[in-house]
Length: 282
Ligand SMILES: [Zn+2]
Image (cartoon, rainbow, N blue to C red; front, side, top):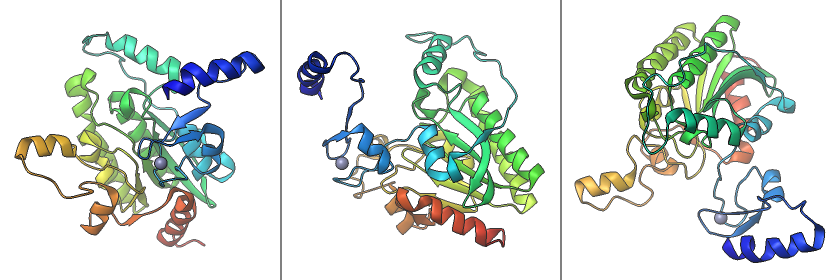
């Protein structure tokens, strides 16, 4: 992108003034083609050259899944924001502040409800831009609030993880969210209401090891990495070459770990259809 950033953008700015946004172009991480940001929005952020499903913000995800883009947030319990007063190269509290200022979201997960093809659905959506979508106490609270709301109202529950796993800056408190979210999934199961997981790239670590692999139905976006530990680490540990596409959606589908792999443009229709079948509604 450097020639665009350093050469083309200043030229355009010189011509039309300073109204040129910084993110006019994006590079596809797979085929490395330069893509016009505005056009990407109209194709659900799927690369038109190679079909790579690029990351979506929570807002884009809501717009792509919910009827008329309508989504009402559900409040959840607030948590101590930095329980261990953690510091590595930066203070955790500073990292949180930066993430909040840059992405607009307050935490790595957003919980709320809306309708998908007319079906009332509670959803927890992850933002990878917020500290890699990592699961800390607030994300655990958001998930539990979503599941409890779904049970209390008799709605279906959809989770769209996009996460590197546990939030290391919260140590054991982060790991505790694994059993806590599993208990919430069990409550969903007892209620008999649908719990659907839409696996996106990446869904790894403590998230894949807890609620993300416990859905009634697992849908995955094409090419998404869904794993506990990434392939590079495994290859380094066992010193063996792993099969092509190891731990990607299609591989998991062929090995019975996910139920379907669906292109992003068809997700809403298919989720609506599944919800209709599971809730016996048209
Ligand atoms: Zn591409």
